Length: 191
Image: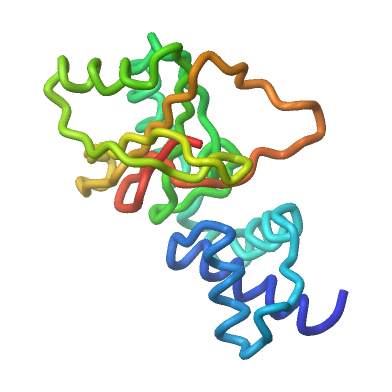
């Protein structure tokens, strides 16, 4: 690994942890900040995930475990609330690298992508419907919901991507990429 590649990974990891950027955005911003060319090869998500874990161990060991636990409690609340849509936790909260700025990502699986919207309307929960990038870059329906995190008394935003009847299982050995998620003080989403 070259010095430039290590520097790029270290800066991208800092941007993920300290600014709550997603991996793609952090890598692109790091390239720009380091004055590298647009054709600079970007590190893969697995390498960035390792760099994020390293950064957390060095600089956030005293706060990150509590923040992760709070985000997981919030995710559990919403997963129970949306149980009819077979929720699956993904992203940084699932991977254990989440901080206060991370999103909580919950994938929903349903035959009709409008059914989670109807459930939220029926429950009186305000939301914003939009499209988000799916795992292969394709647009998928997403719902953004503001959720209060009791542990921080701050609002976060949660995205729920409704995916028609797909299995949530991934081939063994393949990592789930971080994405926006339910967040206390950050953003939240479903992948």
